[in-house]
Image (cartoon, rainbow, N blue to C red; front, side):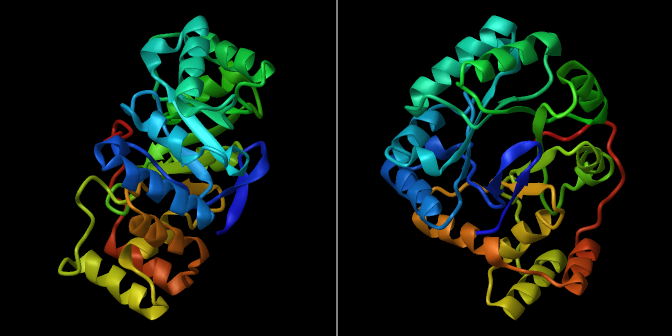
Length: 279
């Protein structure tokens, strides 16, 4: 599994990680086995959130005895992100995850609490050793400008955003801004929401053709396209060991410039939206 620098964090992180949104809807033993299989294959970046129902408890079960292998991330809801509320939310997440620390803790999206207060909560947690770094999620450029001023240079580790082949809005400004400021970009929902292009669609045909050239799958090709920038990571969900193995296969895949250009044409960027998409 390829690893890269994760923003200002002094540690390399797996480029293909594991997301957990809706993982609690799956058969729990199978979901736990899927996460563990992902760890076995090098997908040691696991992302979760207090918003994700029982996902944190599923992750807590899966990582028992393997905590030191992980780059573990969770997120605080905006309505909980006051200074004291951020600390309390993190402590609840740590209990559900059965761990004493997070490698990164994120504000799930911009909310009503001042960022100065949220970030002060993050810093308190960092000083206590309960988190090792912190970042944001679903922040557009205007939000990032405010966060950069509130947090200070070199503090924001990442921005986690919606990014898949049919939703490339972050490429207009968010990804370049993050690259300029040394912030990692983490793509969530990399296969969309039940809309991954099938082989009978024009884009799906391109995916299948490129995949056949590499002995890979269409989903592996899609994941590799999304992490073609040196600052990019992605966190596909897998609720079974078989799906986890398929996702992990993207970690060593290498696409040519010509193949990347074909995908770029097959899934055009489109106009910049007025608001950064979240779903």
